[in-house]
Amino acid sequence: MRYIEATPFSRARFEEARKHLPGGVSYSIRHFEPYPIYVSAARDRRIWDLDGNEYTDYWMGHGALLMGHGYRPVIEAAMSQLREYAHVGLPHEWEVKLARQVSRMVESVEMIRFTNSGTEAAMYVCRLARAYTGKKAIAKFEGGWHGGYDCLHIGVQPPYEAPGSLGILEDSLKHTILLPFNDLEGVERRVKGLELAAIIIEPVLGAGGAIPADPDFLKGLREICDSLGALLIFDEVITGFRLSPGGAQKIYGVKPDLTIFGKILGGGIFPSGGFGGRADIMELLDQVKHPRPHERAFQGGTYAANPLTTRAGYTLLRELEAKPEIYQELNTLGEHARNELENVFSRYGLEAHVTGIGSMIGLHFTREKPRSAAMAQREKRLELAKAFFIHALESGIIYLTPESPLLFISAAHTREDLDRLIEVAEYFAKKKGYSLK
Image (cartoon, rainbow, N blue to C red; front, side, top):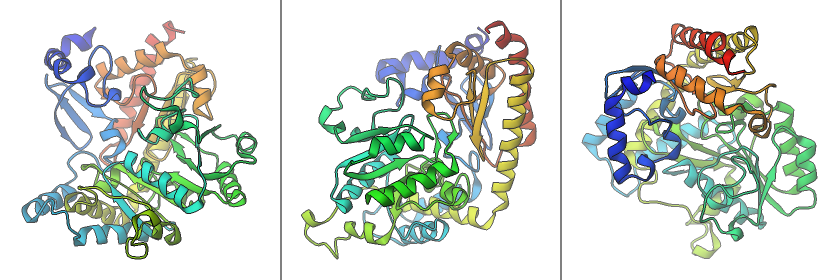
């Protein structure tokens, strides 16, 4: 394998890592066979490994790096903040500025609280939804990923009915309801008669394969929640500020009660998260209005809304607000890549399809174009997916993951980069992929 020949230093580092880190990594999706590359440098849309190999990066920090690696305004803001104060544990101006900025950009967010990750935001938002409605059940979708919080860590990958991790108690999941994605009638059947606190959904499935929800499906969920007295929660950890300044909800024209944020909220470079929405719901967190702890919902953390993260996030959001042309350019690149990749696969008779929206691209080695994660998983040809990943890697292209290809385009990518990706896919479809049919 050419990859092994070209990456001896990464191989040696991985062997050392396995002695100190379970599986050799700090997050299992960062591992791929035979071993992952170890990064030595990153700039714009490129990364380099320890062996000096160069890659066009579509991994992009798990989708956090909308502007590419080392975006100067954010880096300079962070460096300036480091010189002033990086962490104080007290209120500061940057958390207020970022909160105001998010509310200005996202119509549904009247108030917001910040966390250190999307997982934390999901955990706290479920607690808040239960506190506000007085109900227990939380419904989520098959293929939806909302982080490692126990009550949501189910239904991510088949078998959907099984917990996504050891150590999750049955009691933690007894009030979690699994729903079919892009199937409104199926949702109506499953939630009928339930005392439902909330429905949580990614408007575009991330780990589930960059599969967009149908517009009418999201509008239908809004109506279902209204009829049941449940809250509609959008998980925009990935799509928030990536698809538009107002997130996916702006594109779809559907207003959730609460929204979860992450990734780009910290400037793309610092651990970040947050959740916000209607003021009457968020005020249940207010210690001034509810001074007795048992009469309010709790959220907090030592590094929540720390000045370094919030200043970086504020700087990036101001940039995105001031430069709406960024989204037009990203959408144009994404649409070009999706159309051409689909044409390539069709032209050479390879059973593969492309999903996505805006700057998100999902590749599916399936007979039919999937409308849900369940459909994508059911038809997936894993050997083709893994073969394409190695082919791309050896061609100087990296994305996540080998099993479920998800590519993020950044503002640093060019038309030439996407044309190179299409060229690599065409070679695979014509030569290697065809022989695996």
